[in-house]
Amino acid sequence: MWEEFRSRFPIFETTTYLNTCSLGALSRTGREASEHFLDLWQRMGASAWYELWLGEIEVLRERVASLLGCGKHEVALFPNVSAGVAAVASALDYSERDRVAAAELDFPTVIYQWHARSRDGVEVDLAPCDGMGTPEGAWERTIGERTAVVATGHVFFTTGWAQDLEHIGTLCREAGALFMVDAYQSAGILPLPVKELGIDILLTGGLKWLLGGPGIAYMYVREGLHDRLDPRCTGWFAVKEPFVFDTSSRDLREDARRFEGGTPAPAAVYPARAGLDLVLQYGVEELGSRTLELVRYLAMRAGEEGMEVRMPEDPSRQSGIVILPDEDPRASVGELARQGFIVDARPTGVRISPYAYNTRQDIDLFVEKLAVIREKRG
Picture 1 (cartoon, rainbow, N blue to C red):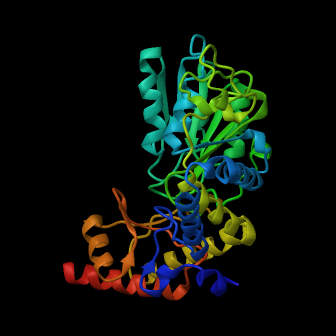
Picture 2: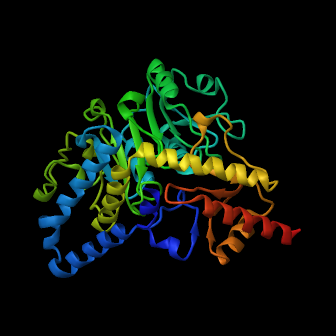
């Protein structure tokens, strides 16, 4: 099964690729989808919009709904997560609840949006982290009666720590705060049943484990919020009849599409759908199980070589990320790339993110090469 999956990604013909949490490898079907888009553009020009591209956008929306276990009407599309967070942030009333809670280890783009709302009187409360994740009681001490929204990541990008979303969701409901999740580091390898987890808003995208490439992000907005939130960060695709071009009023759509902005990018939509089709075909549970198996094997092999390994010890907190602390991670990653090994550098060390298309041999070769690089460095 996994050999067949791997064969779909030509990068492995020339490269040992272990960097999916930065960018998923391009599949053959993803490339074909992009070329199909270009063929349509060349052959049909603008008529492709009405005959095909708008329909493809709706098919992608359906695929996202299948991934998250929600309705198609609860899915909005964006060029990136920042645009989605900005739309939500612009829709909230901060007159009574003027605080937003996030975690110290969250990815900056989520937190920056709320700092930018300081002119509206918004203050950001950061849940303390212990260097790996949020310790017990951290969220209880951070969420309060003035918290408008808890905006945090499912998995921390520098440690691979997976948060307990169900627990945080319960705290949000008890406090009357909205629960927003950045699932970019987890969607595709960890299940995200948004209804069961009590999530109000979730954002992710095609860039990483969903194998769809850059330029596309997905946002789930719980149905009960659609008529409560009126985004000031908006565009013509947010209204019910965008092609009527009526500027006398702004008649917002009644579903999650009211958060969308300007013209969507079908160039990103086509490979994004191809990536999601692959993920749904193989299944998140299976892809995640295979990925976690490789992550644990990587930790074992690195340990055997005497390398320090940073990843959560608790299996329920593990994800697709392993950090190997390094005195000069950028230099190590650069030298690895010159020798055909693609990983990434983060402030905490060399970040490795294997996926289901990797093998134990990939990991063995990587660990051996990194050991040689470090030995030469002295």
